[in-house]
Image (tube, rainbow, N blue to C red):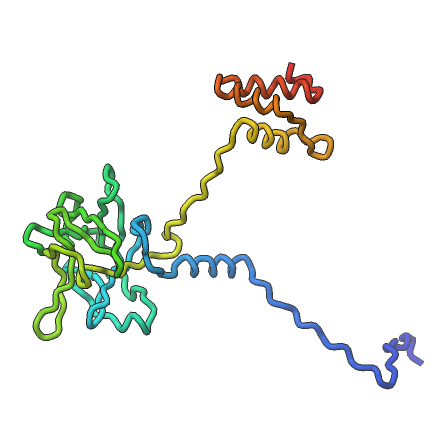
Amino acid sequence: MSDRAPKKNKLVFKGDKEPKKKKRKHRPTEQEEREAAITRDQVWVRADSLEDLVGPLFITHPSDPPICLTVDEDDRFMAFPLPDLDETKAEPTIMQQVFVGSRIVGTTNAYSLKSANGKYLSSDKFGVVACNSEAIGGQEEWKPTITDAGIAFESIHGKFLMVDEIAGGGVRIRADADDVGFCESFRVYCQTRFKYKPKTKKKATDATGTELENFKKFQSWEAGKTHQTLDDKRALKKAKSEGRLAETLLDRREKVKADRYCK
């Protein structure tokens, strides 16, 4: 006979159903979450404020056919045709279609547009647009304006960037328009990570609110209760106006709770 112990099997009764195996849910790893976050940050969205014009930009125009601002390897500026923007997602397909917007130092509403080749978009007094400047000067300044249809770009000469249709169905970019209309309104897209997010402002608090916050944060006793009367509030407001707020708060702390460091 074999010395092996008999194998113990689970008792099965007639009518018992086999337990279903639970499927383990796939939890994303840190690398997958990081890659997903990077993908979300690189999504192109519509720029709807001047603060969105800082960073990579994809500048398009809903002409017929739609176009985007592009430069080639030789710094030649041109209008590159695009598919229908209403049916396809607006995003650049090559690096030369991306411009980097920057606010010019010392100004509040002047921006520069830098191509992927490191050259700046400029316009002369005749409205000729080029993208071969290596430094920022007067002709490289653009003042964007938010319009109902998009964003208009005004040059230093007081003329607006526009799309001009030429014979044969072609399109060229000039900067000699006097007014803003459909041809002068561009659709600008920016990446999600550069989208301007307004900061939430903290509510201004008086002396009473400051003391309450300090109590709740540093001096929690008797279930977080605070001891304040109407006279206390008046005294704190008066101390704040006289510049003795810190001293008054320290005196109150010494009175309401035994603290040897307050003396």
